[in-house]
Length: 161
Image 1 (cartoon, one colour):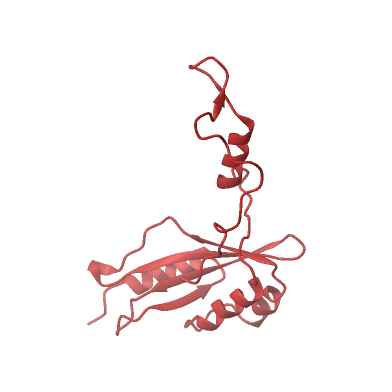
Image 2 (cartoon, rainbow, N blue to C red):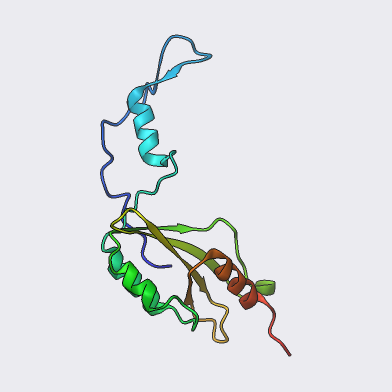
């Protein structure tokens, strides 16, 4: 996979919750959460579903991702030019486990989300696998998750006799 943004090194905003007392109230059956504790949880988990885009130099990240891609049908110049304006990025490994045919290899799909200056988002899907004849690790990039999943299934098929 490509480098992961160094988001965990950034300090979290606001005071940290007291470890011994994350709750206040006297009713042990239904205590109310302490405000600082709730803020810390919100900062950690992004419960509103929005991305944080912690990656810096998003345009360079996009350029390197597309340059490494070995598939002929990777996103082209239009995508490269659009992502040259990106101001942040986030990488998520997709939850669906992927494995090669009968232990033949390994593959995984990552979603690279890029934040554009107008607040829009462009996602690319990286298929990383070693399902090559020489078992070397390669990167393929697709414009949508369905194409990346199809490529993963196609690569995982047993070799034809």
